[in-house]
Picture 1 (cartoon, rainbow, N blue to C red):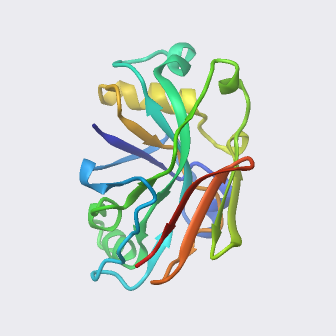
Picture 2 (picture 1 turned 60 degrees about the vertical axis):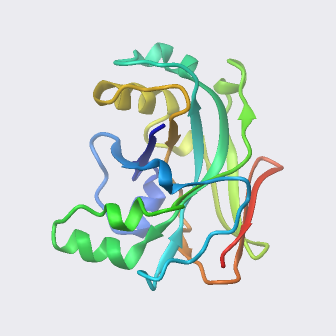
Length: 203
């Protein structure tokens, strides 16, 4: 099982971090050990002093594929949920300043939190998704997939040019503006439309 992630997919988030708008999807990966499910608590790692949440829509790949055409890409996922791409922002800034890879800031254990899955029919896949994240019951992020620079089908087609897709792979599709820090004791909850799919504590 592979975890693919898309960076810089919402213009407002690119602006808040003062990044450049990409000419193609920005792809990075997390190992299977990054996965955290079942609303289990997340334990704040001791190697960062500036841990940020990034709420995203996550796709679940349902069949194997390679070099998928965009017009068929919607058939390669069967469910969606909300997830958190945890980022050690201080480590990321340090690595980027030195021109070094930043996996240590993005791919550490339990850095990919995934909520309860919602099955999606072909008709459902034509509709935009609204999602949001609350920290301690206060809204901190909200987004709509119609605002993504690269929609789901284009993401799937692009990733599959370089990597084989396999059943069970996950794709984090990017975060909107509003990312920010968490502290021990915080509770994060996320939902699609009015349905809560994720609720867990930082310990």
